[in-house]
Length: 63
Image (cartoon, rainbow, N blue to C red; front, side):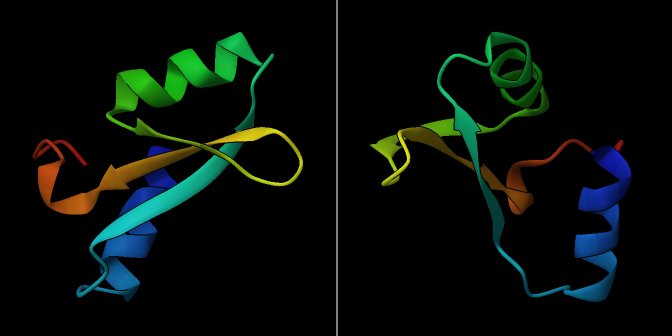
């Protein structure tokens, strides 16, 4: 996932953030994304998946 975010930043320097959805029952994935800095937007899509957002300008220098 970190490599993917690095690629997004490299190919799209004006990109401000990344959004993704996660099945609400997938606790492992939710924990991983939250540790990376993704925050829930408090909304679900039509499939019941939770929406997450990562602001690229908030990333640590390690990415």
